[in-house]
Amino acid sequence: MTPHGHSYEVTPSKFLSITFYHFVMAHIAVNEQLPGIVGLLHFRPQTAKPLNELAEILLRGESTLTRGEREIIASYVSHQNNCHFCHTVHGAVASHHYGGNLNLIDDIKAGCVSTPLSDKMRALLNIAGKVQQAGKAVLPSDIDAAHNEGATDREIHDTVLIAAAFFMFNRYVDGLGTLAPQPKEAYNDMGRMLAFDGYLVTTPELA
Image 1 (tube, rainbow, N blue to C red):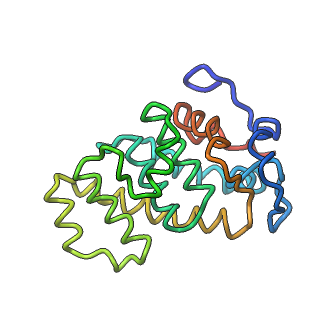
Image 2 (tube, helix red, strand yellow):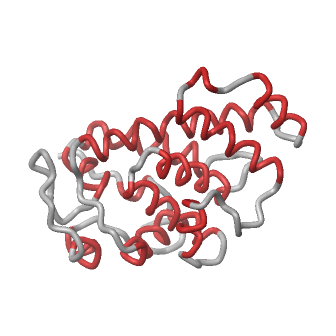
């Protein structure tokens, strides 16, 4: 039972609406009905727990950045890394923090031109984009710009860590050829679940 009173068991049937759209085989023998990182978490439960705990802390833990803002950073970096699954699922999570309109996913692709973000958040997105290019692409002027818009050292730290962590998550998901349905609507239920009940609910139990 989750904190919001929902009972979640991550089973193949939970993702049938998602996998209907995509039938490409992954590179290894994961459950082909569990898309993206979900199949990998179930393939290797021992690593699922720390990975989900990291996502929970970064995206939902105590922070002066909202959960929606942090999900936008994760989705933006994932798009820059051409990771369709991570970009779309975290865009869907972000959308549920902002009322549930999945068009936010497309706006993140465009650089959030229609999303009313603060100047501070845009400066942090710039830093995240620099991290995606290369760690040393982040310049003192980028940090100064974020500070000038009111960003704290903690917010800059967490932005860089989210961007770096999602570089790992993106390569993990795509490097093993996992399922990545194309339509954004296929990610709606999963986005809602992660937004309201968090990442730990997808951690499989060890046998």
